[in-house]
Image (cartoon, rainbow, N blue to C red; front, side):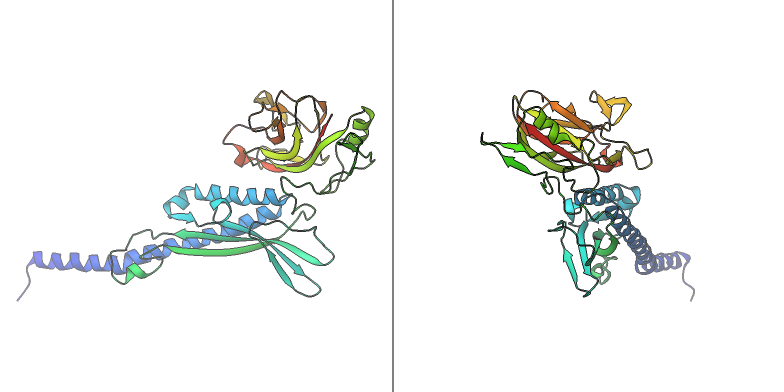
Length: 348
């Protein structure tokens, strides 16, 4: 006996539903998972390469967070339901330093997100940045209501994907220098007044090698009869929208001397011509050349132009730790590249 047409259509509908639930939808989720995994593997290699090319450990950390932020905000990541899990500043990525002794083959891993505890020894070791990526990927087609399938990661529930990639550190002179490091400061001797005075040197120390824009700055301070009361050397990263705070404290009546490394360069984009801490103009941002090094005293001080060198400067009223950053419009720092090594000296 032949079945009625309506009964046949109902059976076809049921069959197709079963087919989609148990075949087509899982296939879509698997294809989405494979695409997401490939994208995350590429992101891991990109962050490792970006970190390895930075001139300092702080810059490397900022680079990986910038890469992660750009990826997380992309249309693909949102469509594919990819979200970071943990990592430095919740970026989903942790940065390690892998040290391999090429004489003994011993491997030491430092981290996560921790600089070298001592200067690099290139005669003994190979140094690499290792980026570990940890992201969660949710199924494109939710199937948590389907028995058995709802327990399968990537199909019925989210799955965590982890990847790692390593790249040799390109600038070994300063991977352990942080924004508040005082490493390799010029020596200063105690004065009878209880403060400090500079010990003149024809070639003050540079924590990253190379020369300063004003190598005779300590002789100039001594020639003016001033005494050094506070000093610091720090790295100001162009991608950091927050102020980088030094350990040099200045108060009313004291003078500020600023110097940057002669080969220091940064840029407003990855494709534009790099420039020094004097920036470029036009345009002007906050009344100062765009991309210039700006400073302030304390967290509420009025910003002022610092540039690549500053001599016997009287800061605006107030007091506090001297702070610096790349002069740019809010929300545009992620496009910048490079960093600047800054020497700050406070005198009276």
